[in-house]
Image 1: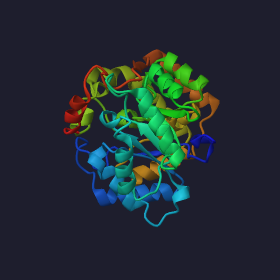
Image 2 (image 1 turned 120 degrees about the vertical axis):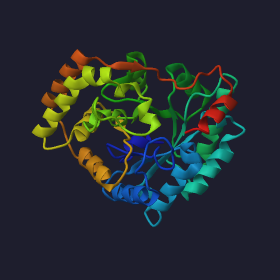
Image 3 (image 1 turned 90 degrees about the vertical axis):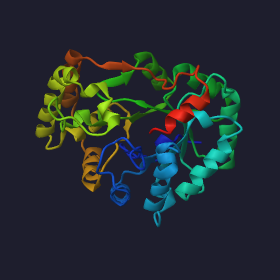
Image 4 (image 1 turned 30 degrees about the vertical axis):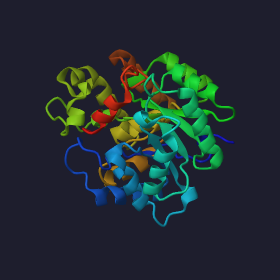
Length: 326
């Protein structure tokens, strides 16, 4: 079977964490979000990422409403199985719930949201995922926030199927280790970038005197005074390149990541932001632009993040309790 990412997936997708989730601040109206999503799809952003965890299924349900009447084959839907549900015994039931909320017969990409606890039999989990792929309920298998070792174990557990993607935090400032990136390049595992605009830090809309609302971003260390001062040269460079290309800093940042071969999935609040993302998908940076940004990044430095997400020594019920607060 061909890789999903050789089947006409758009250069940039749409992330839908904010559909039904608390903690992002005001201005996230459901009808506005679903209409914005439809506008994005109709304008070529055909990769839509969600998860059963987002709003306890609300995000999947709203996506289902948004795609009503559209050709299913024109849309690539990716959803995620929560790490605390990632067992061979539970996976089919959880997938069935996602399919029902989305109103579809299959998902194009089914991802394990984070590495399950060490008490989970990972080999059995991935063998079950392969079986569900053979049934046609899943077209492709992916993971999210996985380390190199867990990806290798997952692939070793399956006979023919292969992990095709790893969705991790990736943006101009925050990136995983070079070891993980080199491994994924070698194994042809696509990087799907969550938080590609660093939760808005790279948009130029915020500063040390103008902070975002919502506890999700207030808790992000990037929005500290020290961070704004450290990365001011980069934010200035993005504005310079944007002016040169008649674009916005957000569009430049997303296009830069696409240039690196990464699939960014920015979130959105309304139709205007989606239209801006559409513009980013058609923006082609020159080598000069990329080298200009790289030179500034070398001076500012990047933050290396862990490919993993959840402390695997903790039992699943701890993560389940934590999910009640997001």
